[in-house]
Amino acid sequence: MAQFTEEELQIYKAKIRRMPLPKLRDELLDVINDPTPERPNIVKTRIRILENREKRYNNVKRKIAAKQKQPLPDKDGFKHFLFIIAATFAYILIEILFSRDGFSLITKFNLGRFFGTVKYFPTIGIFGWYTYYIPFFRKNLWDEKKQFFKDIPEFWLRNFKIALSFASFLFFFSLEIFSTKTYNGVFYSGNGLPAYIIATGYLISSTLYIINVFFPIIKKFRPNYGITLIAFAAALELIISKVFN
Image (cartoon, rainbow, N blue to C red; front, side, top):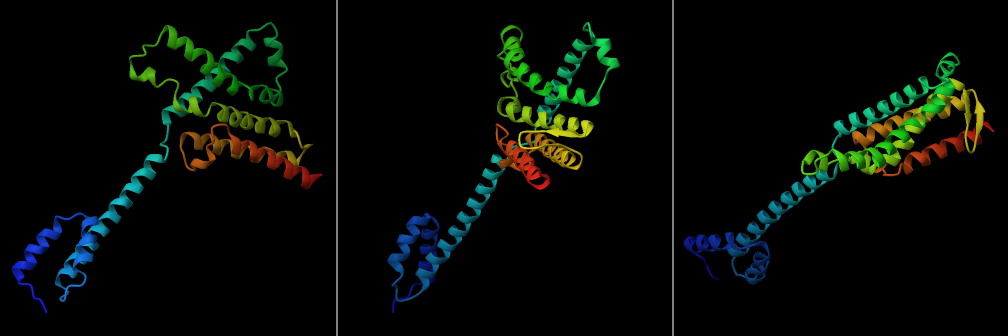
């Protein structure tokens, strides 16, 4: 039975430490039939150390990749979104108030009619800003060499303008339902409790959807065109129509 001196084993260990994992596996095949277990044990130990190290490295790599895929909160985008909605409201309401029938409209103010009108304002503001004002400012005022203006339009405006338009519509539509106590939809029309249930569903889902766009919680519920929200609204109305009809 062959014996290795301590010095020979130390030299062999130093040699093994310099080998990458694929070569170590080849080396194990060469020494696995040694009459003594010293060299196979040295190679096996080194393989186990490198495999554990590789496993830890891959775990860290996966965690980093997962974090990079997770969208970050967009506080500035949220402020920009609210500003566009507020500016649109202010502009249109000022136009109405200073129109020929402005005073008459004030004296005949009706909350339900008000929400029925303003539910379209967010869509007007979002697409007005995206299709008219941004191209105008980019052409006449903005310096494209500056990074700030290269980032315009912002991420939410590029990717979620349709989804946020629909979510905003549902939000104000729910307020209209609460104020009129009546719901007129595609699959169901009625008043009282069914209307309140639909309005509550619309209010909660649209609010959570808007929050989730800017402060991501569940990525798969952030489709660019608001498909999830549309499907929920249709399903809720169908359920109510089946239950109360």
